[in-house]
Image 1: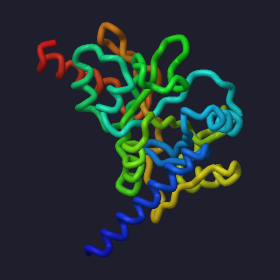
Image 2: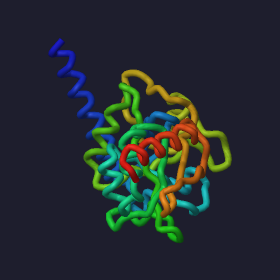
Image 3: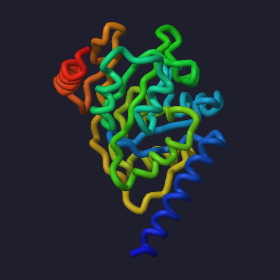
Length: 225
């Protein structure tokens, strides 16, 4: 048993190291998540961003949302949240829920909305065979941008095999997996927090609005906010 665990740990370390190196070298990378397969890059490298825009045949517009390993990391890249929301996210995350709020000075400029000054972040609830990505996220000095695997305007790839086929066409780095990652095959819900503490749905997805509202009201009542 000890030998098996040791081999699994070694494999995890290799996957984390190779993926991180690919990012640092400016490659586009395929990554697992809890919702759908995604494409990513180093947001501090303009050339890597341009590669992704060309690959997806997408016009530069709104910035990509990004993944972090924990609530605390998200708080690092945001301005202080309205009362209650730190506790709400502590309870809701990890989950297929992307949250948009004002970016702090620590956030990469390429991920900040140029007009609104916001950044979209989430902590993914990764399946067991995708847990290595959390180790990558812990080691990065920036949130990891994530976008769907597709040409702009076309349907997103929903399985790992389909995402790999797409990635091979564009020389995108594909991390090794013993077993194909599992996905919900539905996009994350995206919300934006307002200054008064209310929120609005920007995109419906895996997490229902009623669940978010119930959690928010419960926390407000419990904390007396």
